Length: 124
Image (cartoon, rainbow, N blue to C red; front, top):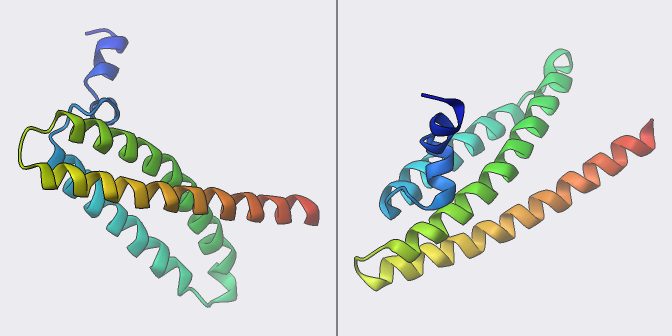
């Protein structure tokens, strides 16, 4: 199997293309993944030890960047998957509403990241 075929079948490309069924894309690749990331970031945010605070902050920034990128992939994938969904129309609509709110979250994350990066560059 060559690399192009392998990438074609990765879960990330399947998610992006909307090839994962809507329920699985929404609940497993959305709610579960975002909950785990937010849980990790919340735990890192509780670090008060001066010895580990810098590392925790760097990890929080890294998770935030990954969360933003993944949020874009997830949003596109769930939207596409909902377009292919043949079940009850209400689930299609609710998935798209959730994507709308995720896009707002991504925009807020990009804004926050830009603010953090600008402050970091100014301090140098």
